[in-house]
Image (cartoon, rainbow, N blue to C red):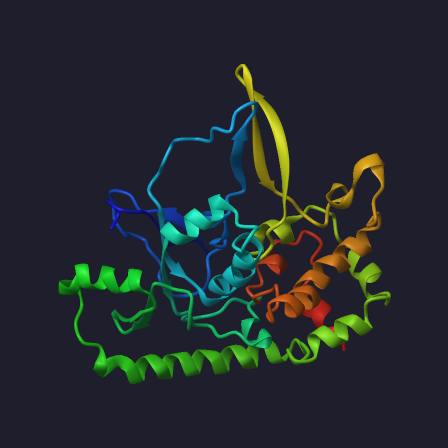
Length: 323
């Protein structure tokens, strides 16, 4: 598979997992199960920095690298693709760089076999195992995996390497039992956080729009933007031009709606001068805007923003204060 794709797999280092490129040592150290890695799969389709053009020329880079195959992607990251695809694959507004990476890439997802302290996907109606948006899914059972095919691309891969697989009929019940057990354990874990029912979150947010909640929450925010960068569904960017040799190039780079510069417009005006209003805007996008436009939250409950926040802002606690 590495002849066709650049293959990335989660590798455990200490208590965390990070996507690493598979090299000569194969899948040594790979961690297919457990929980999602520190970084999301966003960067494989929407890199933090992309050259989009060169000055005085319509020419773009001719360099063509192999597409990416991601192993061990979790359900929370797959759910973020609904948001990313809406933003970058809409008709008339398609981003050719994103579209190419999505269409050419391969996703081999896997069930969570444990959960982290900050995980709360089940509070948002998601499950700790993939049900869609994968090419192949792996459910760990004993010392092997139950394989589920999710696309024609996945079907072809299984067919090409059919000698590696055998009937999994004897393991289906064990797979379902493991999924049910983990879901119940995660539901019990998040219950203590008193997060409102997913059906009520959008309406409660609207009622709290002009409350003191945002100013209180913003008191510890240091405006670093880590919550945006680590989020699998945050997708805003800024364009920057820089000189290279005798010419110039235009770069697209991740941006953060928590930064003062994010909403500044020509003439220096800024409709969100206050940090509290920028923080509220982040919640507005995730729990009000996206439910309206795609019927899904712009948050997948992965809990990465809580782990990354230097100000100790816990998104679950903010949601609980909506009630």
